[in-house]
Image (cartoon, rainbow, N blue to C red):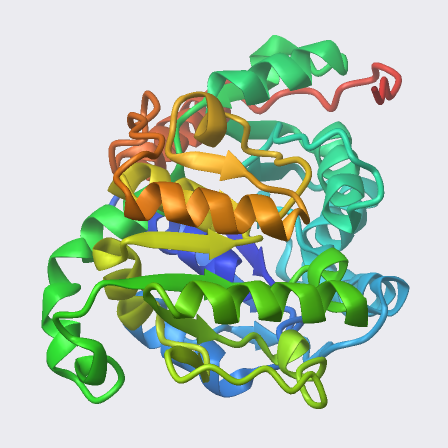
Length: 374
């Protein structure tokens, strides 16, 4: 069997690494890795590949940054010939970036089976581009690998056949479990040792709703400056966010605006943080597994299990609430949470078992049900 993987951004790498490893150990499987180049920070991408033990991509489409329409069109334009030439038996796509939806569209039109890893997640907010990517990808995929029971329920409500859906757990946690033992040693390295032994808050922000509006960004930076007066605050700044920072004029001695970290350094920071402030979906999951309080600067989340069962609290864009929630965490009052079922480091093995069963059964017929978007 020939499986082709399509990845476009760093979260995809984290999800794909355990799946590729499990497939390599499963027997007679040939794998091709296509990197669309959607993420434009090549140096950071290379670091992720090395630390996650992913081989160099077989093909890099070199799409780069651009509008949603541009990225989607460029991935489709370049990927079509690759899929036709390589003739995979199955294409695996990951997460909810533009590359994910674009690859699924290409394969659906070429009648190549598609498996979606991290299927079924919904924020029910169509102002988020990722929500559109999730909805479309799931409706045209053949195999849907879900991280939690709420994702299964979403797919069922949208008319996806039960025999196409596999509850496998969270592949991001597979990578975290594998590499977590290496985290303590990172504090001896040059990236982190300046903060060793100090309590701190860790911040990540990159979504347009948080960083594109100058007023919102200024209010957020003012709140972070206030928080840093109570606890050291470490803010690795996403390239998108850094473009918005000049001119805001926020100054606070213990608010550290730094370059993005490698996966292992960031994992060490998450593991030992007093709290995390973020708008990232994956970090909501990782902090839930690690038992670290997470304050999410979003009005909704496609990962509600991190709120109902985990350590995550939605703060929205209310900076007074953010200050209050941080004060609560520092006083010891925060959501303790628990690890959701099947977030145990073995999701990739379940995906491989599902693919083997599907292949052995002669592959599923492509569904003919109409799209039932909520």
